[in-house]
Length: 419
Image (cartoon, rainbow, N blue to C red; front, side, top):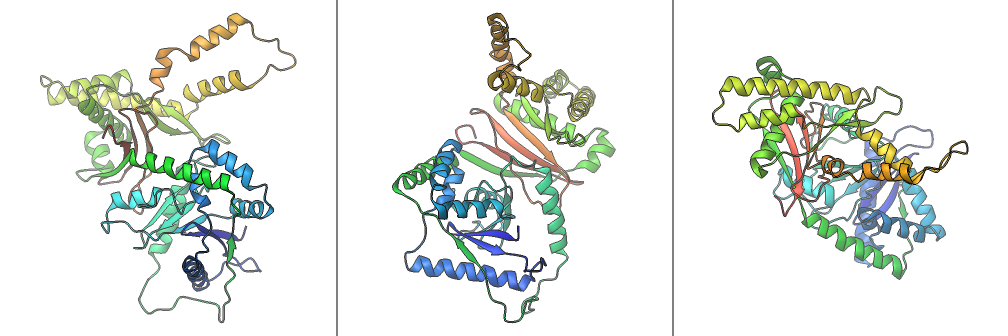
């Protein structure tokens, strides 16, 4: 593909970023294209010619969006638009809103994920890469998770940010542009009937409820980072972060929390992730020791080292493909969706009951209700904050963290009834 999507006020445009010879266009040409998109949207808004915000459907329930998609693609123009969207390299959302107060990382995250005061608008949530630029020039990134894990776009963003940071930006200095350049923006349009309009209204109401029920905050721990943890404490930084999260949860809620932590299995062909079940007996004992006023500092440090050692073992095991959760998930899908092979006999009622009893076991259900859903990224100077959604309905948090050499950055999401 040679095009990207540019979205302004829910209007979608295809912008060519390579010329006919396959060369990337100069920055000045691309800037001219963006100005042309904005000017077209402003003109059409003034004339009352804006299309329905089909973008909102991508933010709502997947079943509703699937039904709307099937309905939309029955129209030739809609089918062409949907194909162009899918074929595009990535999306760029130019927002009319901004992060308020200026420079607030919490406001910036809220604006990036849901478009601030116009919740669910001006995004194409199906794209793996959707850059978001607000009116203050703050840039964010959201992406649909299926094609890849967060590590891939994070590496890409770090690489691009590092390159851009080296480019001098000065007022009055013209950027390279093709002489007499003519814009070639193409508006991608939808024909929407009353049924799809109703789905858009439903999606908008749903997304607004979801957003109101969610609270995102960024926490920066500035006292120390990986250097002190490794050299002075003598333990793994990720292990300390996981113990700290469990300890915090226990102090807030008076109970231990089942934990999901992402382990990468990228050493294998097509490898994605496995679950590190970070709540080990050693971590639990460490939490109890930390909260016991009769214990000494040496007792607490000893318990921390034991917990960290066990955590590192669990992390290595999961990364080597020896975890249990992906295996259990595969078994569940195979049982629910796969028919016996021609050479296999059908399962007996006794075998079916045994399998169903396993999947319905309350211990399995409790241990996979991850009240702490967590993931760590590599040290990053350019990623100011990250986000991770919680997956359980009550007393649960989604936490992504970045451990730098001298600080730790946490991105936390929870439901408003609990936070």
